[in-house]
Length: 445
Picture (cartoon, rainbow, N blue to C red):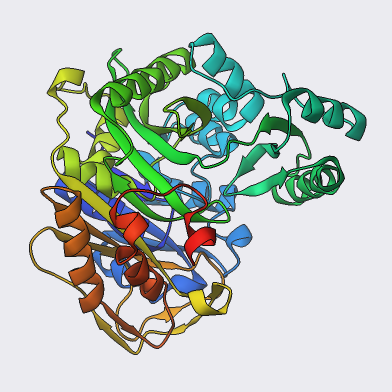
C-alpha cells in the first residue's frame, strides 16, 4: 500500500478520496487554488499546497505545477479524481516518467479509449455491439452528408475527442445536418483542440445505461452491475440510479459481459465505466468508456457494498481483487441526485454566492457527499455541483420515498440549487413507474 498520496482535484471528490485514504492508513496531500483556500476539507489533509490562482488552467490543469507539488511533498502516487487531469494521458505519462504512481489505467489505455474512433475499433474487436455509423472520421461536408443518407436520419454528430456533451449535435434532415456538422466541428476544435467528428444513427427514446468495471493487474476483470443515467439535460446527467428499472437479469448479464470483454481487449486496469445506449427493444450499443472514477459511483457502492475509491488505490498499489464475478451481489436500490448551484427555473444558469444556511439530511441509508458548509462561498470558476444526495432502499419504491424525505430535509440558502427540480422528478408519475429515457427532462419539464 502507498504511504502518501497527492489528491489532484477539488470539491467533493477531493474529500471523498481523502476519506478513503485515511481509512486505508494513507497520508494525504491536497492541492488547492487560491479560490479554494477556505475549503473545509483542507483541514483534514496531512499537507496542503497551493498550486496557483483561481483559473484552473493555471492551477488544477497545470501539469508542471501539480507534478512539482507531488515532488515537493514526496508522495508515492497521485489520485486525479474526475474532471481536470483525470483522463489526460500526457499527465499520466509524466507521472510515470517521474516515478510517481498513477491511480488509474495506463496512459496508453487512456489515450486509446479517449479517442472515440479508436475506442469503437477496440469495441468491435471485443464483439461489443456498435451503433451504425461512419467507419471513421468524416472530413468534408459531402462525405458526412453521404454517410448520413446511407444510415438514415436522424443522425448524431460526435467529436472524436469529445466528452460532457460538447462537440455533439443531432440532425433530423439534410438542412439541419449541414449546420450541425459545422457547429460540432467548431465546438470540438475550441473544447478539445481537435475538430475531428464521426457520425452515428441517432437512437430515439433511448436509455443511457453504464456498466461499472473493476480490473486488477493480475488478470481479474469483473463488472459491478449497471447505473441508469437517463435523467439528463443536454447530455449532462442530473440523477443516477442502480440498478436500472429497464434491465432484467439476462440483459444485465449480457451488458456486463460486454463491458468486461471491452475492458480485457483494451488492457484495462483499475476502475472504469463502459457506457451504452439501450433502445426500447432491449438492444444495447457501445458509446464510450470513461477511464476514471465517475461522479455517480456512490450508487454502485451502495448496492454492492464495494468501496470503489479504496479499490482504485489498492489496485494501483498492486493488490489483487479478493472476489470473483459470482461474489458480486446487487442488493436493493440506490438513487443519487446531483445538487448544483444553479436555477432550474432560469435556464439552469449557474449561481455563485455564499451559503448562508445549510441543513444536511440524515437518517438510515442517507448519504451526503459534499464539501460545502454554512459560510462557504461557491466560486464562479468551477463546476456548479455542490453536493450529491444518495439514498438506498430495499427496492426502488422505498428508495424513491427515502429520497423524497431527504430532499425535503435538505436546506441550502444563499444560492439557488437544482434540489427543487429533483423534488418534482421524484413526484413524477412516469419516473415513479420507471418509464423514461434521455428525453425525459425536455418532455416533462
